[in-house]
Amino acid sequence: MQYLKTKMQRGTVNASGGDWGLDPHAEAVYHLHGDHTGVHQTNSWLSSSTIVIGAMAGAGVLGIAQAVQASGWFGIILLFIVAVFNVYTGLILGSTMREMPFKDIKDYASIGEFAFGRFGRWASHFSQYVTLAGVSIIFLVLVGLLMNEIVDQVPRGFFTLVIGICMIPLLIIFRSMSEASWASYMAVLATLFVAIVAVAVSLQYYASDDYSESKSKFTHDIVKWGTMAEGFSVFTFAFGATALFPNVYRTMKQPDDWPKAILVAYPFALLTMYFPVAIVGYLVYGNGLSGTSDILAALLTFQHTSQAKVWVKVGAGVIVFHLLCALPLVITPVLQKAEEIVNKNKRFLLTVLVRAVIIIAFTGIGLVLPYFLQLVQIVTVVSVTISCYLLPPLFYLKVVRPAPYLMIFLCVLTFVFGLVGSGVGLYEGVKQLIDAIHANPNPFKGLFTFK
Image 1 (cartoon, rainbow, N blue to C red):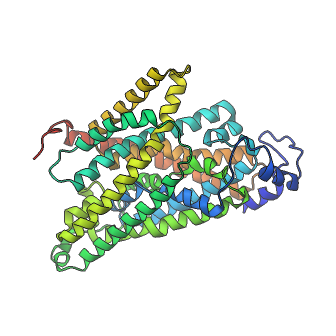
Image 2: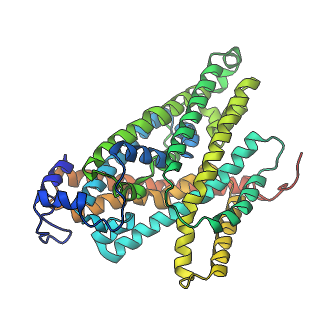
Image 3: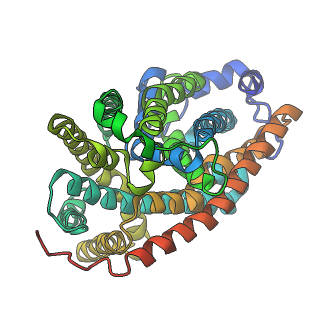
């Protein structure tokens, strides 16, 4: 709607209301053939859509069923609402980028700087790097949990420690993220495979005699207001790829096709990965999910057939492989930013020291706080909501002028949705994390004790 309006008007005003001196045709030519400062615009809208799906896919699908359990059946509606808000912010971010000179679109922070100067860049960087650091820790924790599900009789935290140690030399060698789009395709395939396994194994159990005998313990609720913030956080984390959109946008052959990429990516992720796992997972296991860390752990807890357990462990192995491949891509920007701050002369030994210290610190946090869902909730409300719900409406209202009243209303609604969800989620997340710590006061106990 507004995207079409700005498509006709682009080039007439900039963020401060000045004249760009470009008519629509000239500005379109500038977008396609202008000074791209070395950017390779090779992706079609379909390829870009796949990259967006890949950015969303992965760890999020593992906690979707538990998030519905925390929200009750209303969680299915909340999942849809979260998807709609993320589609909207993706579209208005595209409208905002169309008002910028193409050569100035470098990353999410460049939009913040264009809209609000240094403060906008700082806010964008805070959201981006806190998210990446948090996701890096979550990946380390999740790899450890999944490996414990695959390999029996290994103490919790052992694999997190091993992976962290092994990552130190790898990440000293791995210096950039160039040509890493293959990770997006791998994430899509891995997540689809896990979703299929989770749904198929759950439905097989649902139709079995074992389920009929024990179904009374799998209770359900219509709505759970007290813990719904957990559902909001996990759902937002599952869709939280907004900060990467400028990087995808600037590689498109036809940036005008950005709405197509968004309008295909989100329904695909919702209908093929998130809805099936959320609906079937809660239908079959109900409130029994509350004692499990992820959907695969739930499958292993309640399944009784060896064949089903084999498939679940294969699914866990696929996700582990994906996470191990994605971890260097997630953590490298954090390492590079740290080097930029403390190692401006690019001394090799200092580079090694900085990277080793950060990886050891992340591994240590993962060992002390091995709580997947609680970490997802904290990271989401502290940083992901900023990039998904709070900044895009502000960018749009500052850059795209004059904005129709309907768009102003939707931007305010989106901002309030993110602000309320973030505030309540932070309170509930900290509370649940404290409860988890009290339940396990010594996370290092038995770290090297094998059964």
